[in-house]
Image 1: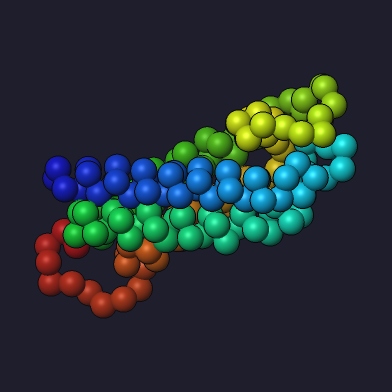
Image 2: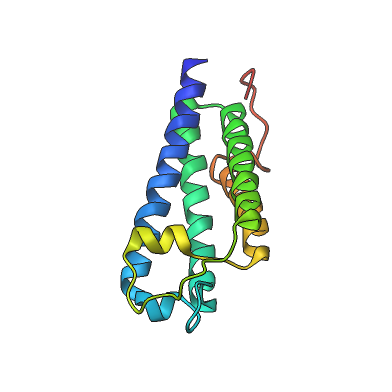
Length: 152
C-alpha cells in the first residue's frame, strides 16, 4: 500500500516538475511575443502547439515513474484519476476566470505570465484527457499483456 501511495506521489511530482521546467524554458525561449497573441493575454498558437507534446511527455513520464516505484497498474490508474480530477478542476478554474482588465505589458516575468495567461477552452478540456491517457500509457496500464500478479 505504501509503495502505491509513494508511486502516485512520485509520478505526480515527476509530471509537475517536468511541466514546470519545460514551460519555463519554453517561455524563456519564445519570449513574450512568441508566447502570446499580439496585445492579448491569450497564448499563441505556437505556444499551444508546443505545449501539447510537452504535456504528453510529462504524462508519460509521470505514469512511468509511478509504475517504477509502485510496480502496480492500480497505482498508475490512481495517478490517472488524480490527474483527471486536478485537470477538471483547472479547466473549471480557467472557465470561471475573468479576463485581465489591464493591458499586457511587453515583457512579463514567468510567474506573472503563468497566472495571467488565457488558453483556448478546447485546450483546457483536452489537457486532462491528454494527461490521463499519457499516464496510463507511460505506466503500462493501457493495453499490453496481462500480469499474473494480484492487484496488477
